[in-house]
Image (cartoon, rainbow, N blue to C red; front, side):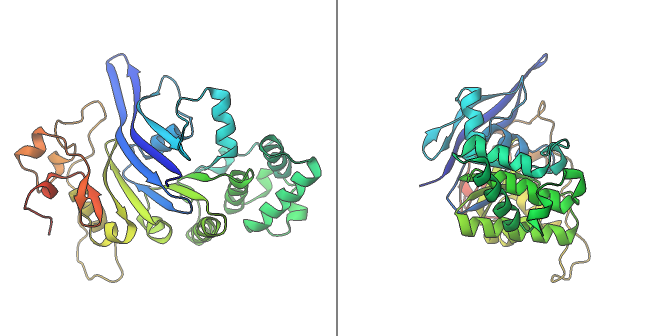
Length: 324
């Protein structure tokens, strides 16, 4: 059974010019212990999908349709206080900039202990012991000494480790990690990736990993969902999506990644730009940039359909034609 099930999710923003649909008809699931990578260009709707799951959409934004199920229980319609308990206890979050997640006025120990005692039935002494264990688990050296330090006394990579410890503090079932390695050096990125993988393996925690970095996805994820203009255009096992992409947009993404193995003189590029959310074309939103587009693509929007081991929202897979 899926731990997280997102069903036909739509996120919308009322504006003076009408309703802006930022995430449209998005469905996916994540099993316990699984890492689902979510990739796409800036503005594709990745972070907004994550924010909708954890109830952090800024007003006037709202979930306009669909539902979010955690362990079979619907959570997208919970009142704010109940959602806050779910967010801390059952879902942890790791964001791109750890400084936005840490209070600069309090020691990291105080922040960890407060999170633990809020969501778990522990005394202050027990919570401090758990905080020390968490700091050691995420790779903070000398946790007995560092627990009483302030965020500014840590490097960027160490702060991100503290944020991961905070996300794990209440033993959540699911972690939403939104660009957790973007602001870090490459060597630190590798350490954070290894840490996330180990936590999944040791705790059975499910992870939704949002990033634009296919290298991070290849190293970390079990499956990957590719988003374009607020919709999922392909989802499948990470190895198959990377090596045998079934949607023309995914093909373009993979072709634009440099390789030390392939001897290519030029990288592929996708002509044009992603449409504005206020001007998404009829039919398949990718058709103005697609070399394979035909009449049906311009008139009718495709749903996800079987394409090899993946699902792809592409009419090429509803006809005898196939992407080479």
